[in-house]
Image (cartoon, rainbow, N blue to C red; front, top):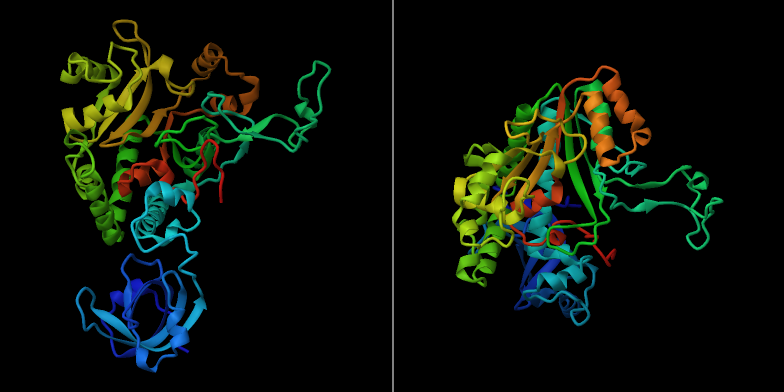
Length: 482
């Protein structure tokens, strides 16, 4: 019996005149003679040539769009244009019939909205095949980047009793009967009787636990699912998404910026090298999509140009204060073209401001640092007040073209007194985070880390416009299908 060979390998094969077995799904069947077969290893189909005069007509009728088949035959140099090799079928077996009248995916262009409703089938389209092959490569490249540098991959908990961001938008975890939970004498839910004997939720970040690992293992990273119960229906938000979060002992903010820039360039280059065909397909898809937009909304760069742009440029580094001065004096701000005017220091920057800095002003990726203390999380290291008495923290955000913020991070506050003072100011209960504070009590050291929302990265590298299209089964308000 011939061994099954993937179509990607066959199309790249230099060897012909051999018998092979190939399996996949029918993408087209023309003239009862030519089958376009695909197995998901590439968007490119291999052509199967059928001797229809000597093939059972009942079998030919079952070779329909979407059917799964196995073909054994001879791999020969292609007689037509577009590919080097094709297969002369000697034996065809139907593995799974597909009724073309019932099959939701028809051999025509489908809208992304329609395909979201058919997320269980959308992997079978060229667009989603390309997206998820790129996603796979990016995930592998993330691990390879950190492993090559001696990092320890740490699995942080999905169920936690802490809210790392202090935002309170968490999903609760309980095994109570929701219709009749036990109550205290005060009428509140008695979580002491719950499975974990306390109120717990799905994690919003592995950072705090990651810091614990870094305080002994020096260089760690997490890569796992995180959850936000934010009732947001934008094209940039999901309720369940994956986060990459390195934490590095003895690193300061400059080291942190270096690590993040190196990592982004590494994984983008890996995808460009490994998935050239897929990214070329997605580039063409995006170019066609851009043609439907008004001229002033079209991107000045193709997808490949945008990716190369991030590889070819050193990221521009400047403080939040410097960025505010640039934005205040910018033409769109003076002409009131920004949806959110930049009034002055303390403004929480919006995506339009971030994109202006990247795409118009510097024309390169940007890293903003030293944000106002009041708009950042409790764990960020505090700077000394500036000459105007303004208080900032050692935060950093990396801004990319077309997407705005892609990485957020900081040097962490390692001084116990400063950390406790900040937690008091923000109303974060110290008794619940006693274990986190212990890392500052026993052998504290400077350290830093960042978070990269993996879907944001996939969105950028694939050029897709909606984050729901770059995760296999998106979770968002009112939707937990499949």
